[in-house]
Image (cartoon, rainbow, N blue to C red; front, side, top):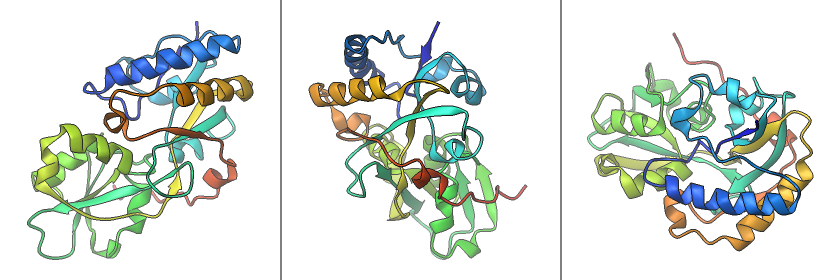
Length: 246
């Protein structure tokens, strides 16, 4: 039995929008001779998402650029990248830097979602005055990093800008922080399938689905979507950051 997920921008508030989009993808894939399963919600994925992403039964999923160029490199099939209209190169994204509203000097404590996150950890290398940061708190999610800054448990964080757009619609903690610039653009979240998957029919299905489906509220999914196929070396050429200090 095959499995599929689109976990990275899925929240309770927009789950039905992602399911509606996926239904169109399933129909377009069927026209290509592919039977795609229903999506597995993030809360039903294994605690170790790598077990899901590395499954030989993976029909399609969305991962992060940092795992894609480290643990998953050479072990999954790259399908493409969704672009959410952020204004950078096609298929690229960046992180929104946020700080405490009452911050009066250089940030010293950084909240980050995970050490294997491109947007939450690797992107922090671009923060101005990065050397002033001497303390770290791992939160487990971008929304939790937002809460840590809003509640003054941290001074600064980097949030995937697509996620930031979604949080602006649903999370009251947004009003408690200050947007303080953005990081440089890097390749967006890659869509992947099990190693050995033929990417061509899945790419055709996704292109058709995105061209024909109009979400009821695209901003609640992160923005208007287009589909790109990037040279994988754009991912692999990005630097791999040192892990957070213990």
